[in-house]
Amino acid sequence: MPNIIRHFLSKFAVPNMRNLASQVRIILTIAVTVLFLPLITISDRPYFDQVLDLTDWVAPTLLAILLKGYLMYDYISKLPREQEVVISYLSNLLIFVLINYVLFQSHDNFWVHFWQFNMTVFALMFYEANRRQSLKPALAEARLTALTARIRPHFLFNSLNAAISLIRLRPYDAETLLENLANLFRAQLRDGSQSSTLGQEIEWAQEYMAIEQIRMGPTRVQVMWHHNAPNDAETPHLLLQPLLENAVFHGIESTHRPGCITVITELKNRWIYITIENPYVPQESELNIKPHKGNSMALKNLKERLALMYDNDATARTEQTDAVFRIHIRLPYYKKASSLNGLFDD
Picture (cartoon, helix red, strand yellow):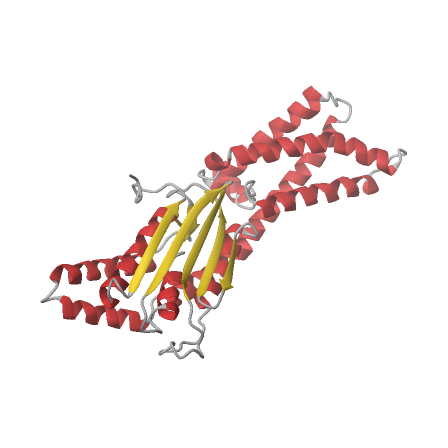
């Protein structure tokens, strides 16, 4: 019997009530349902009177459920899927009963409303489960693409050659370089979640930039960190390192001149904003000694993963001037448990 129940509950999933796209889908679905139900209901009352009657109890019920889902997200999202479905449904049912039976005292129409409520709730959860199921192949493909596109062979070979040349003269730098390189590969080849934390992403990005500074020299490759966002913010796994690799490859390595890469993170109104800025030299410029074709694979892969993880809530866009190339990323702020202890704590 438990297996049957578990199998039944697996057909449903709870929408993320902190996701703007999910909220819009729910509101539009409810609005269409309110407008459609009177058309299939046998009643002598005018159509718009029936719509208003439905709106009287549907609107406050929907508002309360959305608010409950938003406030309980941190707790609900950590539960196993079956428990998440049961607790969400029961809490939604409690809200429905309190508003309809207690607040509005709709005793005569209670069971009609009860049927309409359950039909809509289960339809929304069934749709959410199928939507997530349909995204699994795309997530797997995005992860595979990310794994095959991250480390450029020239970076690996140059880093190993740099470590070999440093072993006798600067053994500490050689050891640091190899440790950071091992940590990067361990992060890139690990199995598990598509998500990470911003603090962990900053740490991996710092290790990558330390490798480049040892390999090319600290005066050639400079980096400025302005980290003003929470370390526990959820991000896609390996968000920053591929973008910084592009910044070094296209913005600094293609010229003889030193260059500075700037990484800015900040929290504004429950949104995480990340900006990566690097020098830009046009391919036709005489200063560009190693013109590289534009490689947008890392950015394209990032946009796909953002869309899959956050729907329309996350964005990534580029900005280019005569001397500077910028990437602007916006993510919703979701807390994620992490064992990382304050990289930037005073």
